[in-house]
Length: 115
Image (cartoon, rainbow, N blue to C red; front, side, top):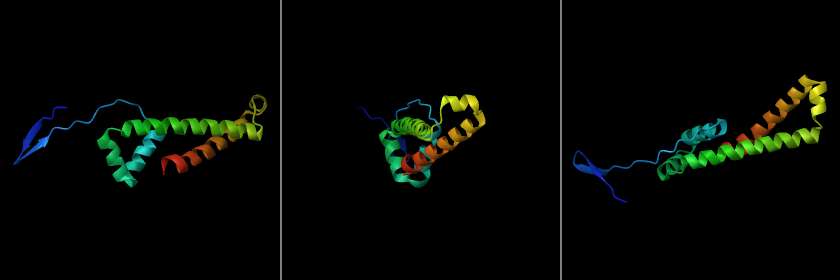
């Protein structure tokens, strides 16, 4: 690897450029990035300088989405929320599914995003 330098006053500083990866972060990736920036600055800086921040955020996003989906599905099965309920009483089904999603997201935020 060849380094180039630029003159800054009396010093020559290396021209370092971080790899530019274009990824689109979802809700959980953005929440994790904000948490790291505000509360875990050393970890954020280390991931950023290693070029591993985007990969870390993408992994968190995928893991969080998967956990929420699996938890909601398991809670729906455990509570007997079925397509028949959806067809017969839509408002009750929507209310139950919203409760399940909220509980699953709370668990993911606590255990994965804000840890």
